[in-house]
Each structure stands twice: as C-alpha cells, then as structure tokens.
Length: 192
Image (cartoon, rainbow, N blue to C red):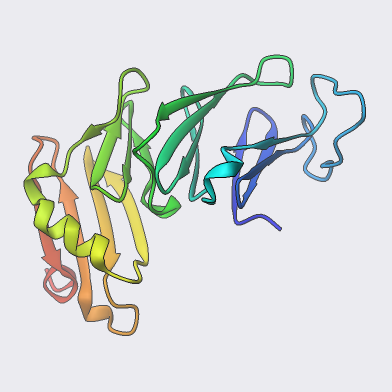
C-alpha cells in the first residue's frame, strides 16, 4: 500500500518507506516488474534505503519528480526506464510533510526540519524562514504537526497545528511576495 501517491508523465508514482514504485506507462493497475525491463514497464527504485528514513514528500515539478525524506531531497528526472535518473537536490535538507509542498510561480516551497525552503530547480534550496526562526523551532519541537498549505496571489500559506487535540493551537504562517512573513494563531486568523 502507498503512503504517498503522485501522477507524472502518464504514470502513477507510489511511495512507501524508502521505495518508489512507478506504474507502467498509461496504466494504473500494472505494477509487476518484468524480468526484462522495457521503457514503459513498471519499475521499483530504492531511495537511499540504507538511511533508515521513509519518503515524506512526493511532488510533480517542472524539473522532475521531487522526492523528500526527513533529511534529504532528491529529484527523479526522465520519463521512462531508459531515461530515469536520480539526482540529490540536497543531502541535508529534507521535507517534513507532503502537505507542505507547493509548486507556484516557478518555485517549489516546502517545510523542512530547519524551516521553510524554496527551490528554483537549479542551485541549492534557499531557507526563506530565517526571519521567523523561533516560530519554526516551536513547530520543530512539536510532537505532532498536522499541516496544510496553499499558494494564492504569490503568497505561500502554511497552517500548522501544534497540538492535535486543541485546534486553537493552529498557527497560520503567510510568506508574502515581498519576502516578509506574517503569522496568526488560528482563532485570530479565522475570525478576520
């Protein structure tokens, strides 16, 4: 069973633990890897299986399939078994929760353990939450973090519940197009 699912290039991508299963081209029910691998056949890739971490983010981007683990980021490029190749985006910057990942305005934005990052598909991801580091550290120290995110009018919205039993502990962080952060506690934000 998949813990994360994405659709890219007429294939379903299914992540579970450190394993990425890619369906056959144009089919959602063909997962058996044949003895002789053809370009359109299903395939199984292990993403740093020896690090003991599971895949926590899976997202379609213009640069390939983004694969995030808690402490590393990867991109799968190519469209079939003859062209697939895995590249490490960053060996130390991971993705905390799949629901935090958003692709908009040519930038990927997501929550990692160290803060919120943006990536343009070229150089290394850039930490954009340095100005609100104490807030991000409070999120990091939280034991449970239900997350939701979205993009609207060039603003990245990240909603984090720091206590699952008490929804009044929901924190909404908004990254403005001018590079500034604003944030609200749930009741304050939702009563606006």
